[in-house]
Length: 339
Image 1 (tube, rainbow, N blue to C red):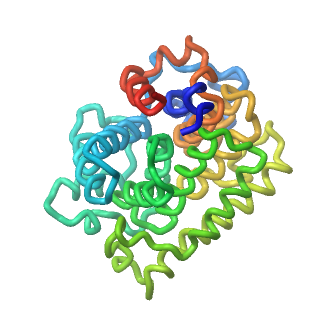
Image 2 (image 1 turned 45 degrees about the horizontal axis):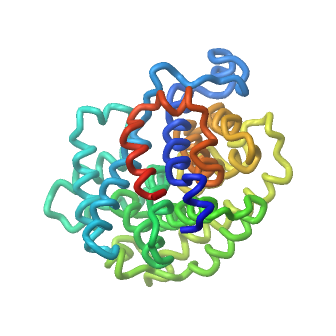
């Protein structure tokens, strides 16, 4: 943890930005850009709704954050230490009356199965690479004191509890890595290159101690073949992102360049694109992500996590940040990891 990270309060900034993006994109999901502009006016002037309610994206981020905090309170982070409390938090979310924000089918199915005595690998939805795993992974990138191995393994394990497709695992790992790099002050101009290098380095690395025999649920001949499929899809989308950052007009829907974000690798790339188009204008980045044809709450959620990790807590005006749902819990986790 660098001095800069603590001073700017990257964890508080990322968690706040994530929730703000989620709330801003909540009303615009499923309705398309023309209707968003018709209903809400020019996208650069979009205002945070009143009340500023979030979706399952923020709820599951907090569930993961609580589980991670419990695990780290018990000692060095291990697969066994992480799996149980995160599993319990996901099941509690599944049963909660607050779980009424149009949650994804994969999360509901997997969390329903996680209530049983099944090994978690049997609950994992091996065919799903929906964005529901990487939109919640930011806490793994923000928690201090983790090794690279712990962070990668934990990011993939938390994904695999619900979304077991190799691309969901790789995208979650990349998302946590991007949040970490930005929190530590990495230059946004070099971010895509660093993420591509990370993907190449890890392309055939299967974290067996974290994932167990998950790979055997798919039709792959080896664990290396299984995980490489995920990294290859992420490398393809990072190449599209690299081109888009140089060529896309901020006035056009970013989904046209890097996808609508319903699936994991597209959510990562389009969330990053919105951040990279407006590195020093975090509210504009959130508004751009929320005014899209795609999964607007998850896209803006990821955009807010990247912007908040890079710029810190002061990126968000108090008149927005103070109104966000679950503000107390977001602040508690952020303060813990910024300390």
